[in-house]
Length: 622
Image 1 (cartoon, rainbow, N blue to C red):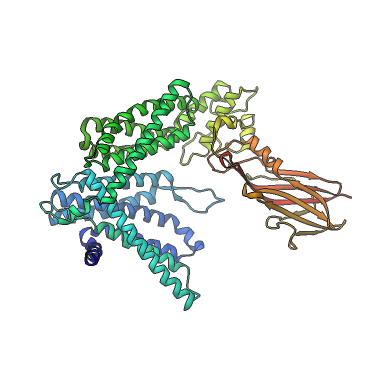
Image 2: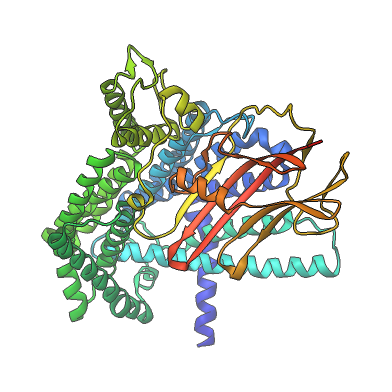
C-alpha cells in the first residue's frame, strides 16, 4: 500500500516535470504569468499603480495563451502527431497570447473615475471577451482530449480534467501550507523583519507548480499511441461513484420535484416567484443537471438510468414555466443583464435537453460546442450582454420620455405635470440601469450622473420613484447602500468643523471643543444589542451635562423609506438626504454623513445600520 501511494506521488511529480516538454508554450505562458505576478508583488502601490493596466493586459493575455496552447497542442498531437505540427501549435499559442496583449493594450482600456484612479484599466467587456475565449479554449481542449473514440469519450475526458484539477489544487495547497509554515517559523524565530510579501511569492510559485501538475497529469495524446495512464486518469474511484449515484442524483431529483411542484402551484394560483430568486435556482439547476447527466453516462444502476431518462423531459417542462416567468419580467422591466443571462441559460438548457433526448451520450460534445457559442455570442458587439440590454433600456426610456413630452430633438426637459406612479417608476428603473451600466454608449442628452438623486430631480423634475419594498422583495434580506455625492454645503453659520468618527462611547479621547460657554465633549456611539443589529447615536455634553443625545434610528428609517433595496451597489443620495440638522437651547449642529448602509434580514430578525459621519459642524448659541 505504501509503495503504491509513493509510486502514485512520483508519477504525478514526473508528469509535472514532463509538462515542460509536453506543453512548452502553455508552461511558458504560465511561468511568465507567475513572473508578472511577482513583479506586481515587489512593486509597492504608489509605483505599481501607473503600471496596473500593463500588468492586467499581460495577465489576461498570458492566461489566455496558456489555456489556448493546451487546446492547440492537443489538437496537433491527436490529429497529426508530427514535429512540424507540434512546433506550429506552440508558435500558435505564443502568437495568440501576443495578439491578445496587443489588442487589450491598444483597444481594451477604459477611463476610470478620476476620484478612484488616475490611470486607465482593462474594460469589463474586454476582460469578458478574453474570458470567453479562455472558456472556449478550455472546452475545446476537453473535446480534443476525448479522442480517439475507442479510448475515450467526452464524459471520460471531462472527468479526467476535473480529476487533474483536483489533484493540482491539493498538491499546490499542500505546498503553500508547508512552505508558509516554514517561512512563518523562520520569521518568528530567526528573522522578524521578514517581508510579508514572502508569503505572496510562495503562493505565486505554488500556483505555477499547480498548473504544471495539472498539465502533466494528462496522458500522451499523440495519434496511434496507447498510454496506459489514460485509463487510470479517466477511471472514477468508488467513492466518487457513490457520491454521484447515491448523493448528487437524489439531490438533483429532489430539486426537480421542487421545481415541478412550483410549476403545478403556479398553474393553480397564478403566482410567480421573485425573478432574481428564480434566476439563481434555474441557473443552478441547469448547470448541475447537465453536468451530472454527463458524469453518470457510464453508470448502469437503476437510479442512474432513471435520472438519465427523466432529467431531459422534466427540464423541458420546467423550461416552459421559466419562459413564462421571463416574459412577465420582460413586460415589467424590459431586458436587463439578469434577464439577458437568464434567456441565454434558458436557450442552452432547452437545446441541451433536446439533444440529450435524441442523441443521449453522443450529445455531449454538441452541448460543449453550444456553451462555447453562447459564451462568444454574449460578448459580441450589438448583441452582447453589455450592449443589447443597454439598447433595450435606452429605447424603453426614450419611449417613456417622448410620450411624456420630456425628450424632443435630443433635448431633455423636466416634467411639466405630475406623472403617474408607474411611469415615474419605469423612468427611474431605466435611468438607474443606464447610469450604472459599464462600458455603455449613451446619447449626449443622457447625463452620466443622472442616477444621482439631486441630478435626477433637476433634470427630470421629480424624485426618484421606486416600487414599494414588498413589490421588490417577498422575503430575504434588503440591502441599501448610499453614498454622499460631490457638492457644496453652506456652513457660514457654524463655528467649528469636527471629525467625530472614531470617538466611541464616553472615553477620554472624545472629540473636545473649547467654546465660550464651556467645554463640549462629543461622542459617536455605536452599539450592537443582543447581536441583532447595530445602532448609532450622537451625544454632546457641555461641562459634563448632556445637552444633546440623538438616536439615529429615525434618520435611518427615513432613508430606508425613501430609497429602495438594491443589489448592494452604492447609490448616490442627495446632500440633503445625507445631512442631519439638530437644535438645542445651547447649540446648532449640522451632521453630514459620508455613507449609510442598511441591511434588513427578516429571516434572522436582524437590522444592520452602518452610518459613517463625515463632519460635524457646531455653533454655540448666546
